[in-house]
Structure formats: C-alpha cells, structure tokens
Length: 219
Image 1: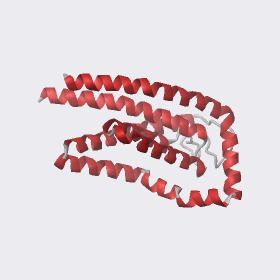
Image 2: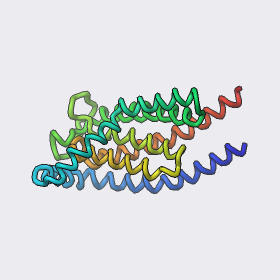
Image 3: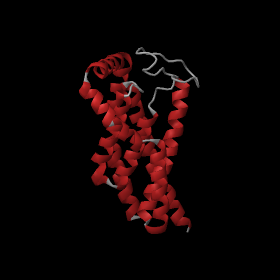
C-alpha cells in the first residue's frame, strides 16, 4: 500500500512537470510547421556547404550518436538488461522490460502515424508537403521515429534513475538534433517525435507499474 501511494504521488508530480513541457513543445510545433521549418533547413544547408566547423562536428559527432541510438543498438541493450536482470537483479530486469516495451510501442505508433501523414523529407523539398497515407520512400518525415523512441526511453530511464534524468534527456536532445543536421527531418518532425515519445513513455510507465502490481497480487 505504501509503495502504491508513493508511486501515485510521484506519478502526479511527474505529470505536473511534464504537462508544461508538452504544451510548450506543441506550441513550438505549430510555429515550426508554418514558419521555422524552411528557415532552419535552409540555414543548415547553407552552413553544411560553407562552414567547415559545422561539417566537422557533423562528420565526427553525429555518426557516433547514430550508432548509439540505432534501433538495433537500443533493442539489444534492452534485451541484455532484461536477461541479465532476470538472472541477477530484479531492478535491472524491470528496467530492461520497460525499455523493450517502450521501444516497441513508440516505434509502432510513430510508424503508423508517419505513413498515414506522408510528409516529404527535407531531401525532397523545403516546403510543407503532406501526401497523406503513403508507403512511398521519402514521404515519412513526420513525426521523427528516432526522436520518438529516444524520448520515450529517456522518460522511462528517468523514472528508474531520476538522478540522471538530465543525462538521459540531454542525449535524447542531441539524438533529435542529429536528425536535423543530417537533413533527415524538419525541426517540427523532431518536436512531434519528442511529444509522442514523452506521452507514450508516460502512459507505459503507469501501465507497467499497475500490471506488475496485479501480477504480484495474483501470486
């Protein structure tokens, strides 16, 4: 009972902290779609072509971030934590299980949305182009799948290791901006991905906790 009360209280506090961020990101998303996207993308194209420092940062830092946040890397890490935790440590097991569920859930949701919306990627156009439902290559920009997944996992990790939340979210932000620097996404794409990832992470954290409590009671 005490554990349930503490979780619910913590969940309420986290909810109160999360809502302003989601509202702020949503407002930025609206402005970005109709104004900032084309400006930011043009600016990045210009600096990638003329600024050797920006190009050096992209070529040296971004590939490392891509490797760490690649789907294969993240899911293998989650499974390793899950299996090792199953054998050695209950807390690590719960972290691994939560990450696997978060990875799969956020990935499925974002893939459905991006193919229903059908937004053209920056490599095709700087303009706001929505094709609608499509499986055509290059028309799957909104929202950013990488960003949704890393923010979902950052939220889940922050619930288990709250002292390091700044580290988790900082890395998620770097991963998101690497998608812009690589001209894979518009700014509004990563904002939408971040919002989606936070919402999915929040919903899963509550659902996983309640599911675990139900399982324990059945035992």
